[in-house]
Image 1 (cartoon, helix red, strand yellow):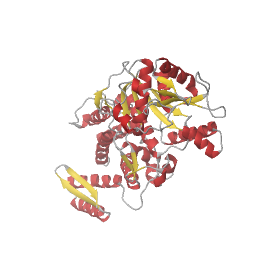
Image 2 (image 1 turned 30 degrees about the vertical axis):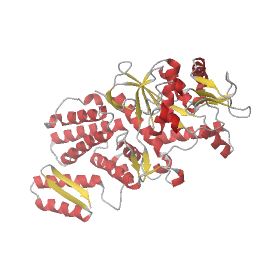
Image 3 (image 1 turned 45 degrees about the horizontal axis):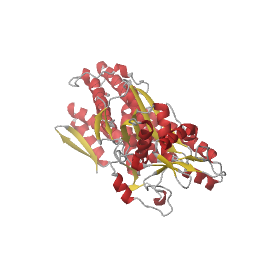
Image 4 (image 1 turned 180 degrees about the vertical axis):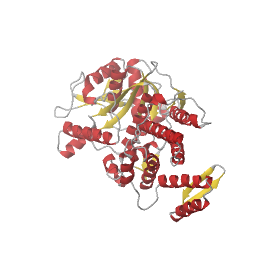
Length: 480
């Protein structure tokens, strides 16, 4: 049973699609005036992994992710660069696609651009004006009347009256209400714009997503997603204008990724802690970045730091170290993995792993728990790999193939193990993968009563700052 945390209701809910077996998904994309940063990567990777998983479970996902290619920031940057805004957006869109390919982010089914849907935008604004949800202000702009939509604030859990009391009112403000927001911005003849029933102008930011999503997915669709900064006012405004225009529920489920902080501070160019995706990829393998972004639950805040990237690299090394003898083993088909089995005997362990993986991902796409299941597979693989028994060798081959299959769902474990380990080797410290392997070897040595070898391994790890703690549950290790 798939459960999703619905921001609209602030709780996990069983997912019930509009049409059985199909999911209509819309995610707010990038405003293309600059290179994508690590915060963008969080959203892109999160919804890529979510889409991959849903499709692995035979959901027919129609994934739409828009591009904002007309906006105040775009026009200002183009002016600063002394270039045409279309040249700027073309460069930034290609750069975005390069970053996505580097992180193995699959393209959406549809990638609409705001400038390609001006007609749909004008149609929706005209409906809102005709139904008195929007009005022409004295400055020529078209504004949405927030007071006409009594449910305004239901997504962000904000009280409209509180928004009014906290709003700043300018003496020359053309709006009827300080909470009102622009649907259409008037433009002069020498400014970028399109002709409309209200004169030359261009769309406001919020209306484009309402127009594009309903055009491609219908008046009501299953899931709307985006970054944490979009919840208010962008998504709140989308609901207000869309439901006023159509008279129908806009989206049944709302999903928001967690924020990215840098060394526990808000990412900001003024703080000099702003990192683009391409800057990060100059230092770290793309799978390390992807693993880092998925190592926390998608709704949780995540802290970008050198230490956390190094930890992510070491975590990924554990997988590749376990797979280094299975480079030629292909990932198995998911149809070969069953959801039965309790894990109580060797024949059922692989089924239990897949069952647990599916349960983790069905629980609001808990990638952190899914990785925990995969680490359990690594531990078993490391324990069995030194056994020459023919039956054990078959088991290790199967386990490696299934580990790769689960990795592919999350978009990792696609590199050649030897090449990955060679390229990401940490010369200053023993890797987590190497520690796991030595712990597994020590456990086997103790089982075989080779106590001298067991003591040698403990000493070897101690010299590298690794402390072993033995208990009835097994052996744990930690770095001093």
